[in-house]
Length: 351
Image 1: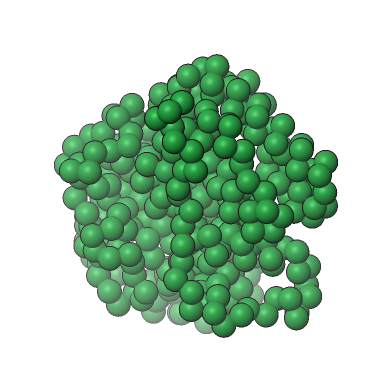
Image 2 (image 1 turned 90 degrees about the vertical axis):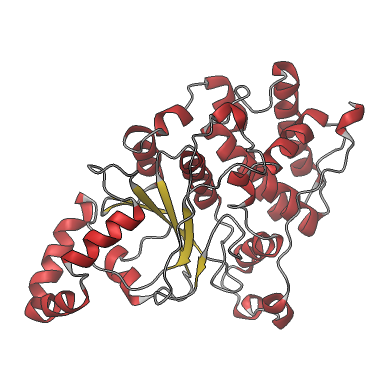
């Protein structure tokens, strides 16, 4: 994205970051922000070489054994690539990463890159969910967020060294890597400043959005009317819930973790459902469309949302199931300009 966007793109480590200043605190209830309000301090870049990152305890024993086997050769290599202490100190001051200083801490989220170009945001649901969570906190100036994309088809050597076979999303906080989804959620809730406010306790909503994604996958695999109807009934329940509560979001007029979980799934249903089985979310589900309209106005969603082409290719790869011929990318897909479906097919003013 250009310098006028919400992110600054870095194709290599040689470029220097120009952090976007954030001068005021935006209450959650005021989302979406007005156009003239400042932007959060958020950076998105590709994965590049870096010093070793502290792994979770479950991997430390294996890494210790690896260190012993490799001996002085690895230690010398780390010494050559490590950032000098003075440079690290300056970087922390620039990035606002120090927890004990006056600036906000820096959180890094590593997400899957596009399976088409290996650079832009990929179509991983969990990656987008945590991206949205952390973006909202960055808007509130409780953290400085750095989002890093990594191509899992050809992961860089440093990525394999630090994370072995682990797939994104990966959260890095103060040099500590959190690898598992449930642990990432727990860390955001308990350890990231402001994260606790995102995690609302609502059993009704938790049950309501549960298994929605599995119904989409069944519809794409089975491609029969019964699976379509199962997904339609689930969407109707969500629509009825929103209509009954009469709120902008699932639990009220303030966004929470459930919205960050639901909306990426609705986007996949809309884009992949239409492409593969000509499925459309019914227009008469006006409460659901109004909900999606509000979500489309949020930078937290639009800046984390993958392109339509990446969502479609995500399911093409799943359906290929190792068939090399089906996995071959058409040249026009790599060159095609990314598109993002964010229109609303109904007039909400008449409802």
